[in-house]
Length: 480
Image (cartoon, rainbow, N blue to C red; front, side, top):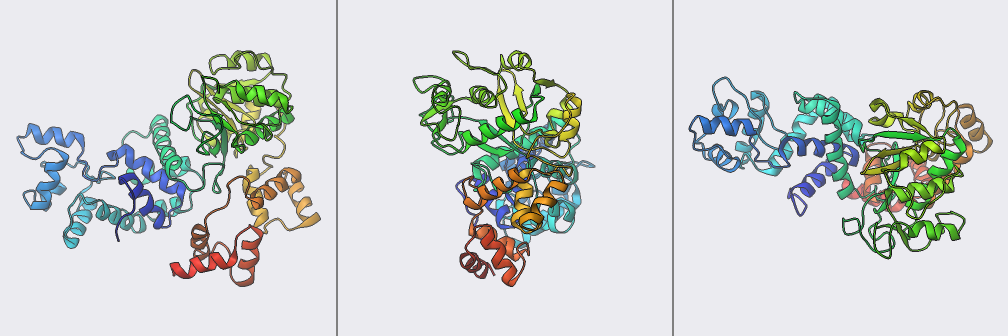
């Protein structure tokens, strides 16, 4: 089949998602591919290029090496072992072992394509994932987060010699960039998000200056948690303050009147100026702008933390002293800052002179973070004893896992969840206000995979989740 897309990255994204790998898994795999080859299917490992040149070989660049393999000047054996006793990487995922490279070589020859053909390499990638690397494929096709899936690809598929936390984080960040570019579900909250953050990101022009309002839907937005390499996390000891801060950030992210800009007449302080007029209800603010730190400053005012907004508001360089003065607990240990499992709803992550975001869900180890900060109790509405996020529980409610009416309320309370917060999220999802609904095509693929049951049960569950059963079934029939 012909690949779809304007460039290699878009073609890879479409191929992988068409292969029923979800967006998180696709982004994670692409983040690793970017690290391995720069998304270049003809990429020859740099060290190999150096050694071939030293050995006087006439083919030591990506293009000349690929052409030599295609023409037969480089034999199959020499492709497997470019130099006696040595193995080097080639292609998108940098196949290195003789066995893996032989599989690609034989496939290309059988198809009559170049060894560097993108579609051939993607086809071979899927062959490997579905045979030799089934555990990796199963982990990424229904991945719950980019970071977790990226770590699995790194450790169990690519297996580079350096598997340090910095390498893991970099590859996950690569994946996040692809997700941000191509995701059809993640701009204003996404529908597969596990642990989420809310932040002011960048203007519509990709710079620090922009027009009033969110022109792209991604200037001020909710997205999956990702590491900003934070210097610290600030947590208010009062759970109600944390909840109000997170709710304010969510309201800002869902209000397309709020965009990103630092300077000019529509600068970062215009959000606060308008927020004052509506008693800091950020869902009611008109056209304005903010940046990452001014957004968190305004949310802190809205939370009742005691914060005020000065003439120019907080910056990422001044936030720490301001937060400490307000009684926020400061966590600096990297263990709590680099893993979404330790996220606390309403916590503020800060990288000085760089960026700041707000955690919107409790991770599975949020209790440990609160304990490390010397805070007892859990945030209301963000998780219970199981550590699942409100978003996750709300989707379970929609799928009928928590009963209905009084029974649902009792079961949620017994499990440590705030019924009101969960129900509010259920209502929000069903109303479509957070951009949370998937496309009919995506749902159809889930139906085929058995995730929505059968017969009348499927029909009821789709209707409860706000989907048009007939439209989804039409997509199912077309796919089959």
